[in-house]
Image 1 (tube, rainbow, N blue to C red):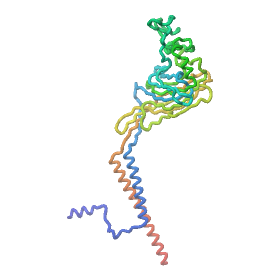
Image 2 (image 1 turned 90 degrees about the vertical axis):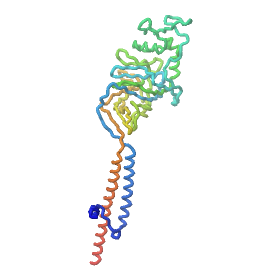
Image 3 (image 1 turned 180 degrees about the horizontal axis):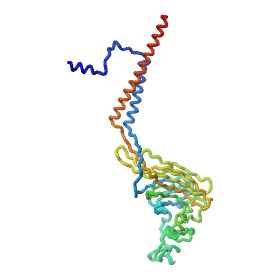
Image 4 (image 1 turned 30 degrees about the horizontal axis):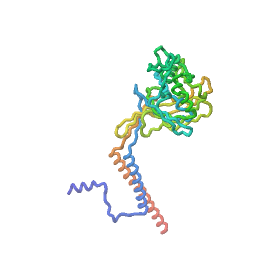
Length: 384
């Protein structure tokens, strides 16, 4: 019994007989308000506990030898698909011209409706009776070896399609300005197809796999090649000198998508105001790792961008097209999804209940004793 009495003396919550309670209207209002506040804070804390929060960390990017995947979806309302080519090049010296793999082109009419979708380029039609290099048509199962029209490196070189003639010209640094005189181009309907698509637009979407070093990719009319270490384009003479490079970027991203990513060029649109020229996007790519609540990592990138238009009337005249110059930030961003622990959640609940209860008790006591003091003063004033 003595131990129980000592334990009773340790009670930090002494009970008061209900006969001594004094309930007030102000106390009731404060109780209702404090209960509502507790409920709102509880809901807020429960949401934070249920939904994960993202922690951000910055580190130096030390990765090497990685590849970069560039996803794009761009519409050119005034350039035909037969004219637009996609090229990439980077500071390591890797260059790819007129890329076709992993890229889909859609021909569009003046209203933006799809006319045709294809992955191959011009010249898909097979030549039925091709021209032999040294003259004469093939008749009796002879082996065909088409002429490269002066662009052969050796006597054994053959150009069996219009595209191979263009590639041979490209290696020589020549522009294919007379496709109507090339038998392969004529037989494949090269000129007819160019003229057929005149006035059309083109949607190009797909992806590029490039080195993770500074470089650029661009969409230009004509076929690219190098001449005297200068990057030029094979602009066909039967097309207008001024190319309308108006465009809309439906989608542009570097790497995989991850929750919360914002690609600043999605939906961006530019319309030509004056003459033809070069439209440039200067992109700073920030490597990013996103780790979800289950520990799965997504290696991707974010980017910022600035834009510039170079007028085609200046000297030296810039090649018409849309150019994307990208470089990499030395800082890598790491996003990590985290959930609050149950212990942390319970601690916050106790803090909410105890804090609101204590503050409301202080306010109630202040109002109660204030009212009593005012009543006493009023009573003393009556007796005087």
